[in-house]
Image (cartoon, rainbow, N blue to C red; front, side, top):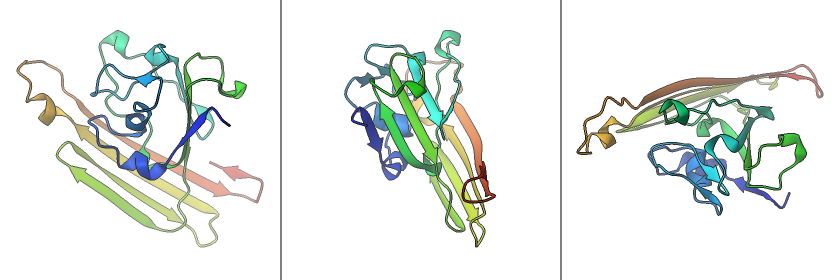
Length: 185
């Protein structure tokens, strides 16, 4: 597909921004911008934040429009440690992605080949990911937890607020292969 940009999963893990994640790379692409570095939200071709479709393993993810409630999405729903493929299209995407106007982001989570553990810690958070696969690879499991606290960055500002930017999540991706054609995921 000529309108789709493929983003390396390795690049997504190494984004150096406060919001981190895949959106940090997307914000650098042409026709994509953001009003704040503290959020993972982005706008495409003059659209709104809520006009971006997000799919994980071909399943659309509903994300409520948080800015209306004076909230920002500080931790992306997409966990870069679990990603195998990232496809982003800023227009001209396939009809199967629906009728929103701005963009389509399709993420595919990976299946581990063997037992694995990885992690990272910093002054503003950390993440830990573990994966396993049976010898015949009929069962695979990927578990990942993340924590982010940007108070250290925000406390350098001259303003006092009641804002507490602490975010955490846990995701898992389980697969059981019944046969070559059938998989429970």
